[in-house]
Length: 311
Image (cartoon, rainbow, N blue to C red; front, side, top):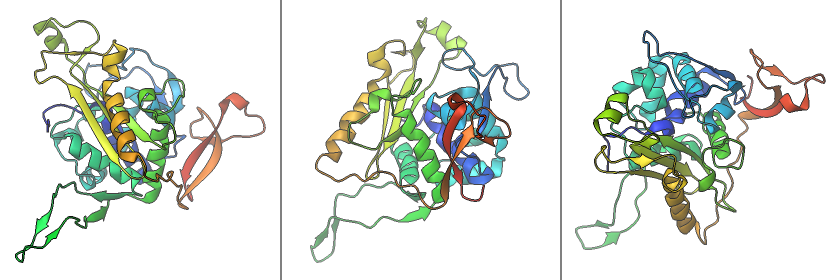
């Protein structure tokens, strides 16, 4: 039930890319440039996990590679009121909604239950259900009821939900640079996102931490049936996870894989279905404004992406 730790890049669909699709009608092929950039009005540079910048890319690639600069750029394009409304409908609230560092996971007040519920809405055509736990209901006459109809509310358009889901499918894929390869489950259509938080320079020095040390690693993912969120870390932040160690870095993904595999056994899990509100088109990667591919576009730059119908 930890809510005092940030959720890292698992926040990106909630605060950055989801709102950009919902309010700005961005396509999954929207061009974003991964380049050196500072937070507005500050001297602090926004860094990627590898301390590199990869240039122009689609929103899809920025998300499945978990690049931080494009995420902050998307965050800045949506006004605060719209971003707040989008997050609130997914059960997320806090001062971080107005801070650019929130775009890459400097959050508070969100635990695994909250995160799983938020992600479930992307897999449920944009309908959000507040999480609850009921073992059974006992009536005065002694009769019991073990099922309870949940209340669902619209959180976003079905087009936004599917387009985010389709990008998150690529996180859990064998695409080059995909961050969620360890969460791939054969035979299941899975969408998900990794998340890692970082220590600041003072914390590194105070606790004498080794390079590659991080306090939290998350994974949140879902199928059409279930949503699961996993946090890995230690009670005290002075004890770190070694993100350079493959076993420790992928622990949250492997827990997710184990749990999702078990709960899905023997149950039919339909694939995510594209709604009529979403259309496909082949674009020329890196163009800004985004252009449809032509007969002169090299095959290496052609990519099929999703658009909100009419945009």
